[in-house]
Length: 636
Image 1 (cartoon, rainbow, N blue to C red):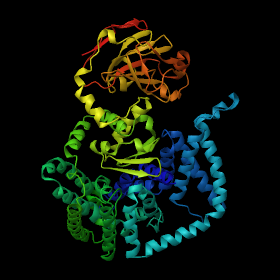
Image 2: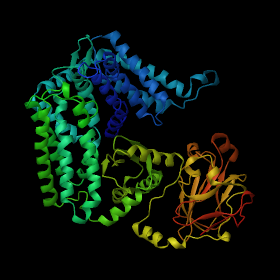
Image 3: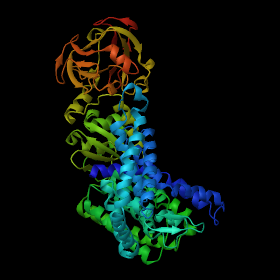
């Protein structure tokens, strides 16, 4: 259930990303700004259709491949659901929950039916085309049920809404505390969705009814903004002050190393209101610090309410939104006073607790030097960093699914215990969160999208990324680096075929050498043999790729075809097992070339040396070669 709710929270991030555009249009079009009414109307076009946008975004987020077919099904599902309910009982108002429900159902049905096959005379309606159809049918049933039954949960939600909105200091304080406490499990987006986009209603001068704290505030509701204002002192002053406390508490010889990072995430929080990089830097080191932070957030919310301050944002409570909405806020200057007070409190409390309890916040780690070395090494590029993250997570085969939100990777693992938390920290992760039995969240920062994309690219290409067996082995490999050589006689051609330069492979990952140096072969034989003496270190679960390591630690990857991981093992027969010792020329893999060629983009097979550093691979032959032929390649 927690994983399910997290998927909703993650999926909400994409539609929520449209809010800054909507807020800017609404605000800039107002009389006190540019006085362009159509611009405000255009922005409200987004805000007034958030339920539909949520249906589309959540359906895409739930779909295993983010397909547009799922998005279309989500939109259709929402329209069928809302219009069906209205025809039964026009007093039922599901608000954004209708969009959430339609998106979840559409996404789940897409995953179940996107590849369904029908008899030939119905084949046009098969596959992805069937998803909007089955979603419509499901929504008809839900519309009938909810049209009669939703009145009861609606009464409960209305009562909850009324209590929160009318509970004064207690209501905003409870919301502020819960908003922060739910961040570790990623469910703050869920509670925010209802507060920001559904709770409360306001009728504008043009007789349009708008719902939700953000929408009402931007459209001039004199009762909106109390549930948003208190975040500004925390995000602009409190958490940056916590960064200053962590810097002052850092070890003297580490201050220079962590100062830049802490300054960067502090400025990010102050200017944009993105706080997770800061929060995850201490969240797991000291739950006490995080509980204090959550309570202080509630305190700031209560103070803002008591001082009759109303302010709002379109994205988050940073400087940009503070300045943009300053003229329509109520008592906004008092937020600066509260912010300065909260900044002092955060600095004193955090510094005292860090020093008194000897918390290992940034700059106070025991393995400083190693962390610094690894982090510097990992910053060389997203492709290289992705490989290291996959290794630290136990290899690509240990990952069932990979998603991301604003600052964190969200993973479902085969065996979570295989993930190396220390290695993830050395690579720059600011925290690791274990959820349920097999779920893992890794906080990376605002660059998470680029890292996740690089990781997905390597996983989609079925590149086996083996986890390091131990630090001792890694150290041995490093000390033996100069032994990674290969003579012409030590490498034999693994299959008969035509040798092709690696840069001519029609795949960017291999052609640009992201996985390492080597060559490719267009095979004409159907059995692949070991090119070296060594041990099988990896047989990928879908059997399309095999990794071999010789006694010197040289690793060779044979990746049969391109995008063949999607065949899920069809057409491949493994003839060896992981850990098995092999001799040069031993058979490794039998392939149905005709079947694979028909279903995969290409049968061109990269042969890659994956763990070279300064060594150079020299390919001495090209064109057609025979199985077992030597003199093909050397490494110096």
